Amino acid sequence: MASNVEQNIRPEYDQVIQDIADYVLDYEIESEEAWDTARYCLMDSIGCGLLALGFPECTKLLGPVVDGTRVPHGARVPGTRLSLDPVKAAWDIGCIVRWLDYNDTWLAAEWGHPSDNLGAILAVADHLSRQNVAQGREPFRVRDVLDAMIRAHEIQGVLALENSFNRVGLDHVLLVRVASTAVAARLMGGDREQVMAAVSQAWVDGSALRTYRHAPNAGSRKSWAAGDASSRGVQLADICMRGEMGIPGALTAKQWGFYDVSFSKTNADQKVKAEGERQFRFPRDYGSYVMENILFKISFPAEFHSQTACEAAVTLHPQVGGRLDEVDRVVITTHESAIRIISKEGPLANPADRDHCLQYMTAVPLIFGELRAEHYEDGFHNAHPEIDRLREKMEVIEEPRYSADYLDPDKRSIANAVQVFFRDGSSTDKIEVEYPVGHRRRREEGIPLLEQKFRDSLATRFPARRCGEIFALCSDRQTLGQLPVHEFMDLFVI
Image 1 (cartoon, rainbow, N blue to C red):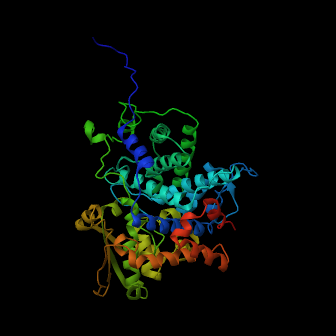
Image 2 (cartoon, rainbow, N blue to C red):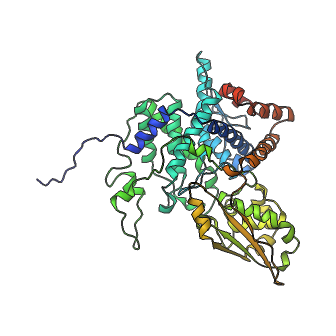
Image 3 (tube, rainbow, N blue to C red):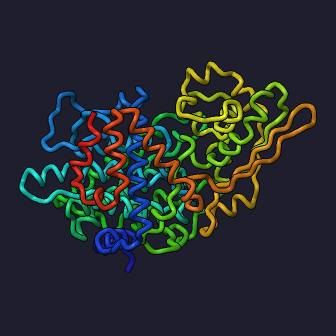
């Protein structure tokens, strides 16, 4: 018999939500490589945050929502004197870690920066440790932070492997919110139902649009969007720890769920996706794969698809820097993802616009032999019109092999090549770099440079003695792992 009423039978939680909860609560992390890489990731992420504190456009956003607010057992923000509630602390930590586009990266069908979740992890672990000690209970240890980092990296990274949110206009910080919610609920002591409820709420929130990352609207929101997502994860976890119910069909509900509302893109030129194509695809189970294969930004504070182009440009600088007036054209050979998100022509309106422009990030090291965060600022850009003159001579072309190797799970290269042609008919060699120094294939070469990057960042905020103490502690995995989180965070108070 036909009916115009819905059957109100509450479903089981979507399998995607159940799998995330089971992984967060039950998986045993046994990979020594993952544990060690997480330690380097912790060092690097905090270092990136310390560097960001030198930029007023970042620091103006930090601090309590209401000035003068005092929080019992507040969480610390590294490199400051702030002591905040864990929701705002997660926002601030996530903001500074991400501000300079210098923290780790994951590249797949969706890209992102899994260390963005550190905002939630450090804020919750620090606050709860201080609270526990005040109540005579055991604090969290730094090993608990590393554990949560491995899990958050894995959730965000595995969801990104074959599910392209950017192709339907959604920003990758959605995955930060999901991962942060899951690990924050675990740190708060959530059981399976509470973790699932919290994760379902994260999906129901929908997602930010990517428009603030792309021409002609690129702007500084991309530098705090991940902190915002991580902070929201803490808030959702807290709500569900208070007994708030979840939304079991958050993904699969007909018409109203995430798949139907947000993960299918339709327009006049595209048919509605078949039902099965709206589901997420998972080529592997959750484990520790993402942390083991994470990409570090070591040489340049630049969007990761450009890292190898920057490296090639530094190599070519001695041949080009003194002949700028003789340059006829610059050919950048790259992969499809770089063309889609960072290849730009025309005026660049702000630092966030410049650090997401392949041509700008190649031009600066060709001219100056280096690329630093200060090179994106208005003052530097306006003082050097030769940068834009060189950009106007650039040609960007796709190499199909680069695009294929970028998506190959056994390679995951991020290849670029740069060649400069002069008006007299001569040219430089074509410099090709397939794997950046922060890639797993270049770990042996990269780790000493990563450690030096951390030392340099510490020196921007602390006296030499403190820098030495922090670095020595972080270099000792066993001692660091057993240190109470609140004592670790106190080391970074100025």
